[in-house]
Image 1 (spheres, rainbow over the protein chains, first blue to last red):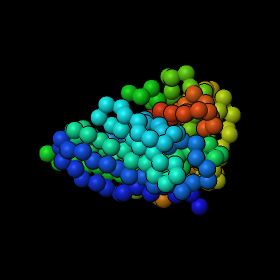
Image 2 (cartoon, rainbow over the protein chains, first blue to last red):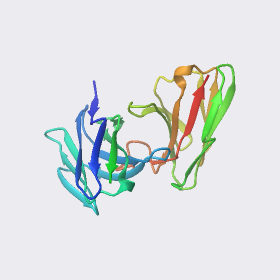
Image 3 (cartoon, chains in turn red, green):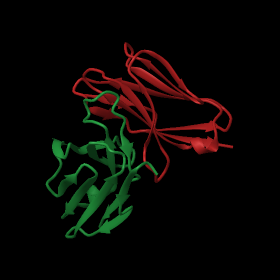
Image 4 (cartoon, helix red, strand yellow):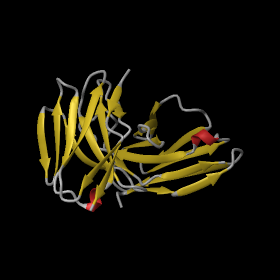
Length: 109
Length: 116
């Protein structure tokens, strides 16, 4: 079966750095997405990786290793507003999106 | 505001009721989706419409009935639901069906459904 694994919950301190991991086992690969979802709000797109390597976008970076079936989302200079759930999703060979259950990130002062 | 609007935001219904969820997008997208989000579970794709044609129906019970009258509007009609159907129902839209490029989804804020 197809599977996306990510930690259920993480806690970090304001101003610090946190890395949220995502491992996947899918039938083929056509890209990996990260979305952010604040409580009671819509998930919003953060990043898309289809080739190996690091994509940087301001305080957020996303890394992909296709050979390892692994990605991470790196958040730097954490702010209280970064408290949210982070959803990892992979598009398989049929272009179906397979979703992880999300990682709830709690930022403490 | 994401450009995808869902109403109502909250809905409580009995098992014998009939209600509808509405989704409207102002982004010029031609594909629309219904997802179910339950606590601590992955998003479950329910239905996909591309150019107003249903292209996906992931074995969803018939008590959920979608309707897409045009490319900007999507409905989910609910009938004789079960308590386990209580969840957040998310609508999303994109430029194409799931097979198109990066195909980033734009989500609405969801309709929180409670079935008593």
